[in-house]
Image (cartoon, rainbow, N blue to C red; front, side, top):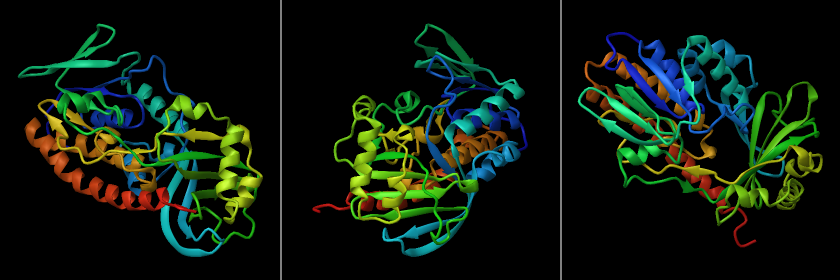
Length: 363
């Protein structure tokens, strides 16, 4: 990243994954950044498991986090596509890492502290005031903050997206619920089990799993068709034992899902009722406001690219801000570089989602 940045200070709205990466990328580009998180405390220990693909690992390395990220989670060499009966359709080289969201979050928070990037909690954005030379963020607690640019990394229910375009679409439910956890089952005899993530479309639900190192069992998840979206409160109203029982019922005829679930620990069950996607967003930026990550492009979890695309976009935005002489040109270049990429991934993932959601229909 080189040149004279088009902004001196950016206000980053959202402190999850995309926000901290954006702040670090901006810092590397010579732009001051401050992160504002709506929740009153940090999200330490919160979140499920995801895979970061090679493009995402490359983006994290670009902001100086290659070694730290490479030290957490588990290396995945290949993706194995199966038929739900134990047979293998294909093996695809991957070269990514699976990890807990909390592991990456910890790495990012530590680096923010090391770099001296401020993170303000309890700062829920309610409005912005734009002028010819800057933007002022207004928060629910009555506070304000000034900068040259405001970046929305505030997720699928983005306040910044609504401020850019009140008519912008919101997230769409995929028709699937995610349920997952840990099993003591060891994958002895499963083809390609070493350092592989396995995906199988079962008769009534989609199943994914991978062996943990040193024979420590198996991590698994199931995408369960659910026509009506549940709220988090409704999902919590069903016990972990009941969710596990449902997964066992749906995968009773699927292998090795049946055997993995037979030894699953109900205490480890996590439920994700809001598996959502973002439809194409007409406006990625307006004036001094711009979107990054899930606020503007959230492909379904079927893509395996949600986190990777978000951190890639963070790095690309910083690069454009550092290399273009004016802010409108930088933001236009950022969208032109990223929109075709993310929309192609989203389209492919939508096809897979449709297959998952219709699994076992009429059975």
